[in-house]
Image (cartoon, rainbow, N blue to C red):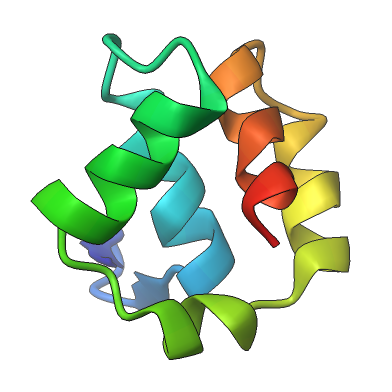
Length: 77
């Protein structure tokens, strides 16, 4: 994700933050099974790329959200 500030600087989200944002904006995810289906079937997320994510960083990111589905991401590990 790319964001421009007023000073024309850019912020680029990490893969982990981008994934958390995507899941956060998807309200219908209630179970790990629904999350798995959404990420790997609907969004066609590459499972090998998923395995390479920094799950420690994902845990830190998840703690900042008030959404169970983001915490469930780590259960797919």
